[in-house]
Amino acid sequence: MADDLLNRYQRSAVAHTLRTLELTLRGALSEAGRREQGILYRRDGALSEEQAGEIERLIDAGLREIDALAQTLALPTEAFSNRTALLGQLNVLWVDLHEIRAESLRGYGQVNPDLALTLNPRIERLIELVTALMNLLQAE
Image (cartoon, rainbow, N blue to C red; front, top):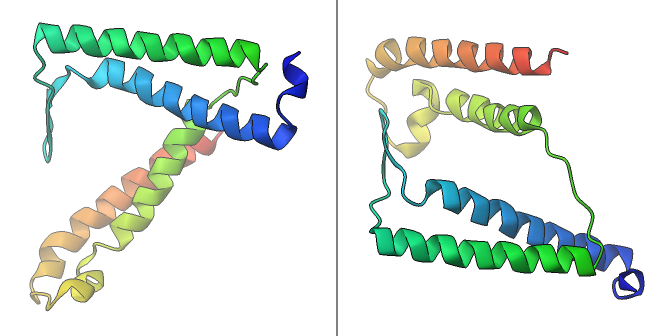
């Protein structure tokens, strides 16, 4: 029945887009009303009860549609590794940390000669921390 509606490339494209939408909707469900104060950021998820209820209703409706399509079109489930996702994010941040050392900031304008003394040692410690985290995640 569903096997002849999509070829394998179409099935993959449809599954990928719907999977991404599902992840986004589920993430929105947990993040929508969240308030959090970080060091360099603040999440201000101020939603009224009415807004939160409507968002939850719309997300639930979206998830039901995704489920119906997944069943009808026999879309494959994909397993994600939290370890791999975190490792990928840390890898990008490792590169980004190298790019914000004092000598690399010249591309944004003249660099104060004293900046390296303040910035670089702490950036190096963060690079070491990220490297240690990546090593732990790569270990079996």
